[in-house]
Length: 277
Image 1 (spheres, rainbow, N blue to C red):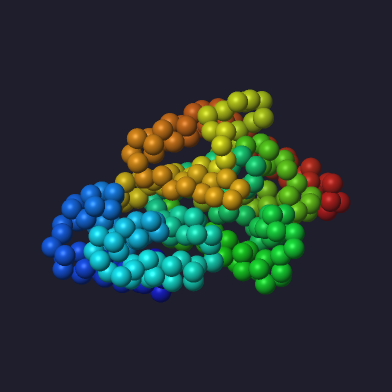
Image 2 (image 1 turned 120 degrees about the vertical axis):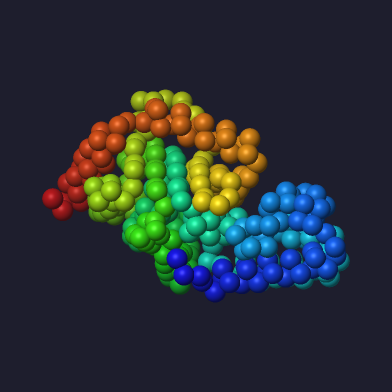
């Protein structure tokens, strides 16, 4: 994909980091030890492939004695993003991932949402939101979803808990159209999706959404999210644990064929409720 202005801005951040690191006579590994990340991640920062967390940017300023330039640059780049601070890096990583795997226990994942469903989800959490706020949130979410239509789209897997399929967010018409959209993506072979049935009972991931991301030139990462916060996980041992949890969810889910049948049946039921059949 073509570079965006924000990607180029983060590459500038990386060039600045490299210049200051070399001026201080430090290798990537040496700087990494001083700011409590690996030398590999310093290299990823310098190439604009990964973005440091705020506390890392602050420690870089301290170690390199740069007077806060990295914190100020970080804040400026984050402030111009349409996403919550904790989701900024995830949104960027989605664009360079070769494979994405998601588990959603209650709400359809953002990459699969229709505009109407996205609006209903946003309004549900922000009942006093302005139209401008709603439009911005929906637009940014739909723009993210465009990666699934791109010629270089990542391989995309999703596991939806049955609750996410059967909760009528937005009302019968909205959820019916949402499920129709998912069914089309499945039938067009854009995504691989299964449903974890309620009858599965307790399952391997009970703490919110889970996203796994794989890349061509960097280690895999995981991302977990609850209502008001999200955490990007880089530690290889922790990522391996999340991968195992996802494998267990996949084993407990319905087959792809049964999952598609459930989704299409639910969509038909909702259309009947809405009186649009």
